[in-house]
Length: 141
Image (cartoon, rainbow, N blue to C red; front, side, top):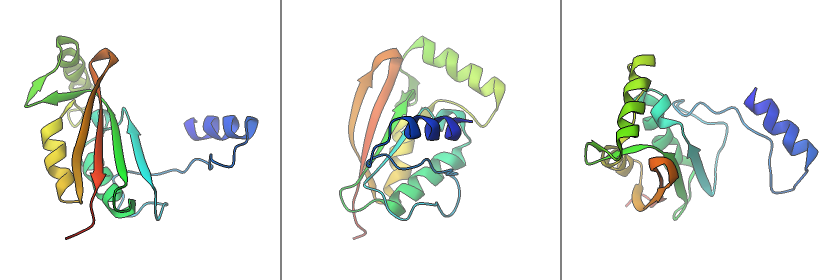
């Protein structure tokens, strides 16, 4: 449904810079995208199993060029602690819905990103106790 909505908006306001939406499973071994200047993921890794986060990091490491960025947005724990009581309540509600869901620890995600050539470059606090997190891709050494 979301892809159909995006396609409808794109058709209503055509732009040469806006490509058609792509059905992409972040955890898949291959993506229907060979290369990207940036990968943006909004409000996903906390409502998906850890394999989706790992797949996102792996896929971004594969499709991004040297200096390309992976931008994440959403709630995170910092150093194993929630950033606000509301995030802790949200985390508990997610885990009640699915035990594989939950607010991820930013440092754990950043550590996993390193294996895919991604380094944490910026963390920006956002409204509603969310963070914008930017990783930069570095070629294999």
